[in-house]
Amino acid sequence: EAQVTQNPRYLITVTGKKLTVTCSQNMNHEYMSWYRQDPGLGLRQIYYSMNVEVTDKGDVPEGYKVSRKEKRNFPLILESPSPNQTSLYFCATRRPGQTDTQYFGPGTRLTVL
Amino acid sequence: GENVEQHPSTLSVQEGDSAVIKCTYSDSASNYFPWYKQELGKRPQLIIDIRSNVGEKKDQRIAVTLNKTAKHFSLHITETQPEDSAVYFCAASISSYDKVIFGPGTSLSVIP
Image (cartoon, rainbow over the protein chains, first blue to last red):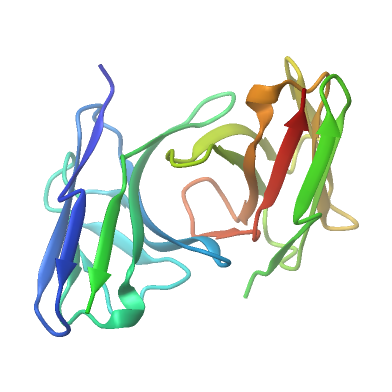
């Protein structure tokens, strides 16, 4: 079964405490990306990766880091989280086609106090 | 940079009627335009996309049109059903593998 998993699903943390949200896929897709979703602001792309060791900034990359050391994993790193990073985060993969197919993870709800 | 506007922000239609959501974009280099549906409390789904070499694309009750000259694209849902109720997001990108910018979303309610 095609799957994108994210961990943790929920996290409450404090300002400045480094955290990592993991994203893993079992479909061997080359493209992976991270989004955040905030009320009134919709979806915004943070970072994306076209393949192993290839990453690029999305619309709102400030305060985030990513790495893509292997195809299946694309972790999102917050080195020093701040309250304005409180959000719902989605990881996704993409498979090209007549209509591309995107597989979104279940989301990670992060609260930074 | 790219900016995507979307209208209307909310839309209510009677079951069986059609719904149209319109988006405009600013960057003439954009060539890829996906549409997403997000039901309440669920993750987004890519429901249809269109590339700039095509003016229209259909998939069952959903169609998308693109006018590159005017820099706008639209989502058309025919014979709406209650399960079409969701927030719909349009987006624009140079390609499906590049940075993507989203519109602010349209909340569609289909009234039985």
